[in-house]
Length: 167
Image (cartoon, rainbow, N blue to C red; front, side):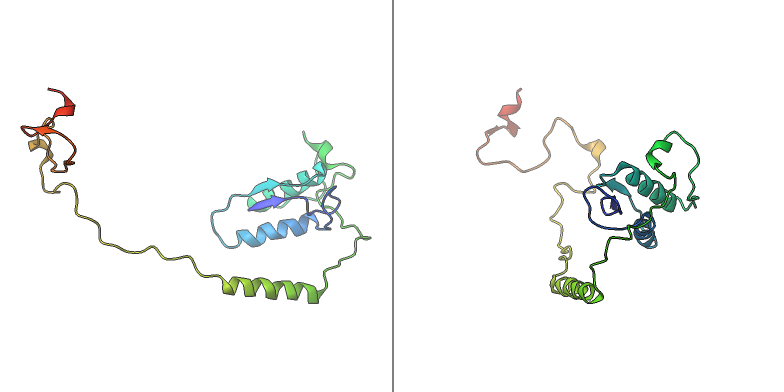
């Protein structure tokens, strides 16, 4: 699960207004599937917000509750100016995603998924016969003696021996 933090409110490059709690809810949602999950960071251009997001998401992965007031620690300076874990959304940022717009995107995505063909199944096929017999006793076979009959017509064999192999 790639958890880029450039969607958080206050990110220098991102133009979204997602809170750390909202970001964490996405992680919580995916973890509810109960599948082995690797959570990776990425993105995020306001370091103090990236630290908040990854701290909170790590707590979700470990099923640990964290207080919003952060205790002094070695990384305390990453949580300035208020030393709180959670960010407040920017009240001046208008949500431009109308319900109609979101429903339209959802319908388009579902239609595109419906049109996709499923991955082909692995085909079943008969295995070719083995190069050797399974009932051969390996202790009875001379390792210096060639036991297979797979000889190419361009190779030279004299008295049953491959002349390229030496005396």
